[in-house]
Amino acid sequence: MARHNLGGSGLAFVMPFLTAYLLFLVIPLGMGLITALTDAALTSGDADFVGLANFAEALTDPAMWRSFGVTVGFTAAGTPPLILVGLVMALLTHHLAPARWLWRLAFFAPYVLPSSAIALIFVWIYQPEFGLADSMLSWFGIGPMGWLSHPVAAMLGVVVATVWWTVGFNFLLYLAALQAIPDDLYESSSLDGAGAWRQLWHITLPMLRPTTGLIAVLQVLASLKVFDQFYLITNGGPQHSTRPILQYIYESGFTHYRTGYASAISYVFFAAILLVTLAHFSVQRRRAAGGTHV
Image 1: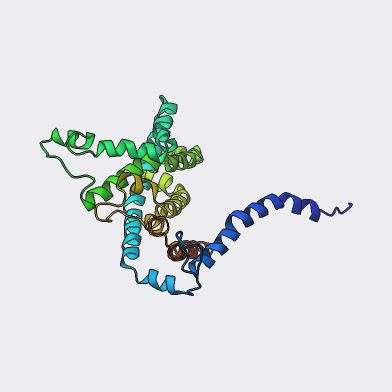
Image 2 (image 1 turned 120 degrees about the horizontal axis):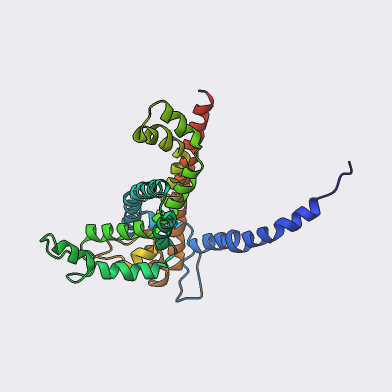
């Protein structure tokens, strides 16, 4: 068999990706790191080298840590319901044969809406007295609540809005995984006398475990990068109690014009996300290694 030299053609195939990767990821990362080592500002064209001063300031900045805590709190509060609600929706759609297409459309439709539309909907829902939330509470004799004026209520309101908006993606992943489970497993268990609940706990949920792990990782990474809904619904209020770290980076760079300091915070946040990712890979590697020894 003749041997063909595919080196040139292979390089031609990957060159568009390498070019885009270099222009839109590697070079911006390098330029951002250089900016983080200077006192660059939008109001000044000159930037002096300050070394690690911006990083030292970021690590001792209470506002930065508070914003980071808001981001972590939102991730911890939003990830479990996004997983659980997506699973329940997928189970309902998978087992409800009539009008299954309608259930799919209804559950996934909010996911395609822009963040600005979601913000308008939920700002109206959370309006005091005449908003939908207070109107529903009045049916039970409960007075108006400050949905966007109380720190805990504002955080809960953004979590609810995010779950309603983005759970459709998790729903589709779970639905695809459910459809991939062989029917033979359910038929065999039925012959052995297993009911619906036993099939759910001993067949469905174990078979969905890889999908659940994938959704959990994607959801944590997406929640750590939250910005739109907080900025549009609460604008970080009240008293910065719902200001995520990306909004703090935005304000540092484009409100206070400290682009060097904002870049430094971005790299601190990037390091935190990298640690979370590495920790997940380490856990997955240990589980895989443990499974091979069983």
